[in-house]
Amino acid sequence: MSKETATHKTYKYRLEPTPEQAQTLENILWQCHTLYNIALEQRKTWWQRGQNVGATYPQQKAELPDLKAAFPDLASVHSQVLQDVLLRLEMAFKRFFARVKAGEKPGYPRFQGKGRYHSFTYPQYGNGAVIDGGLLSLSKIGRVRIRVHRPWEGTPKTVTISKEADGWYCCLSCEGVPIHPLPKTGEVTGIDVGLKVFYVTAQNEICDNPRYFRKAEKALRRKQRKLARCQRGSKRRQKVKQQVARHYQKVKRQRADFHHKEALKLLRQYDTIYLEDLQVANLMRNHHLAKSINDAGWAQFRHILEYKAACAGKRVMAIPPHYTSQVCSRCGAYVQKSLSVRTHICTECGLVLDRDHNGAINVLQVGLEQDRREQAKTTLACSDSSGGGTAFRG
Ligand SMILES: [Zn+2]
Image 1 (cartoon, helix red, strand yellow):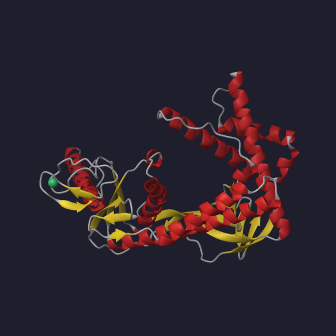
Image 2: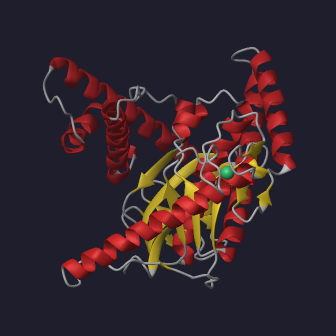
Image 3: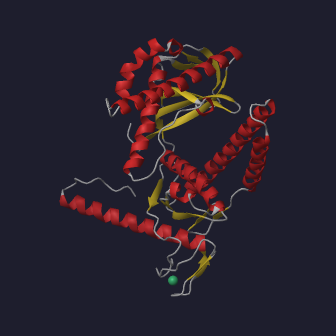
């Protein structure tokens, strides 16, 4: 199916394993985490010996039967699930080398502790994992009850089983999910991350950070301090740790819920939304705490917005972040201001505007300009090579 009529989507369903099944799931998680660490160790030794300098996924996959012979417990896990563990390690290394190449200082892929390995994947739906009615049949585990609270669309591709603070879940990723377009409105906007608010649009619509967020985050910090005071290895610590995990999960869900609602609101209203291509990793180093917290959520919001836009037949376009908050949106003069300055006051044309609103207008203007340039390029390419260029989707 073409990109315009279909997309991919992941559906998350709750699992209700019996106590015995839950024990089996735990065991598989443990075996996967063990294999991950063994494979990481293998890469390290290969590297140190100078042989197989670039140990790769195919090489490790070929070694899997030998590993199974050496670690018989691995036989209790479906072979494709084990292959996926090796693939995850491969991806961790790919990310590591990409960041080295980009001149960053990444952390070397690390050994995963028991608490850090939360999920395993059947990479091929129908091969070891299949949903039949209210049951999820898993090879080497059995038939686990699953709550399919809404049906999936498209073709299921992979099945990931994950353990969260309140139980087990199944993530079903599907391809060829039909798009349900939202009606076109002919409206465009730019949005900017606010310091105090979540975002501001070029039309000066303000989206506030929900209050319960701050409350929940405070409570979370309090619980974490409590955890730090507990004695290591004690029963009480175990209990508080569980509380923190549940609370953290609740905050995470509330935030995701908020992001989904806000994204839908914007997509209903606008056909194209421009936003800054912020490097969140850089922003996280920002010393302004309130802003970095906001930015952390911003990356997730952008992801959700882009994803929902793809499903709704709308556009989210990133623009390079160049002084959007420093430039005057009316005359283009450069007005430098620190993070503490809340109002844009132009010394050239006298424009007085809220800092974030001024930024959002700039985002919109840069976005529209970017689109015009693209369109001009395409028109040129089309007239040069009679129809060789691709049509611009506006
Ligand atoms: Zn000005």
